[in-house]
Length: 169
Image (cartoon, rainbow, N blue to C red; front, side, top):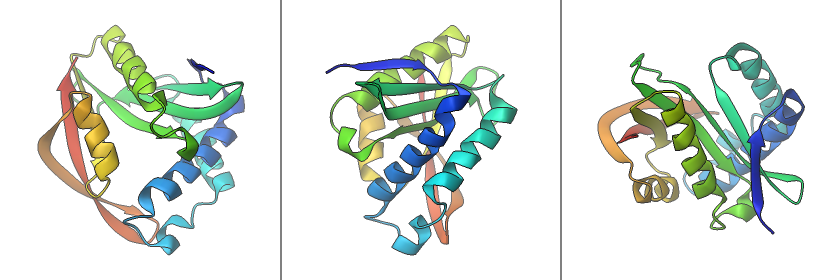
């Protein structure tokens, strides 16, 4: 059964939040403590996306991936967070844990890169958790390289180190 991509709508956002939380727990549990991943709840993550989408829908793009009518992944992109007008930022690719290794992430990434090119950006950037070896390998296979920039961000009660990656478009 193939995966289809389509633009997200407001009706998708609660399901996007629940999928986002499932993805975080499944992916980050090998290097973050359970208590850091217990919050937000899937419902709270959905409300986060509803609120964020309200303010960013004119400048950002969310696409959802569906298999047999069920949400299995999403991507989110927008302008660079360092205000480089030639760069777009891939804010997120998240998958339902059962979809890992089935090509959905690659489909979402290729689509996101095409969308960035269509917006006129010449470079793409993203932030990834340093300890997320699986995601780092995924992006590196897709032509992304580390820029040397790093930052810290809290996930729940845990401080995490993030690495910036970029690639030409």
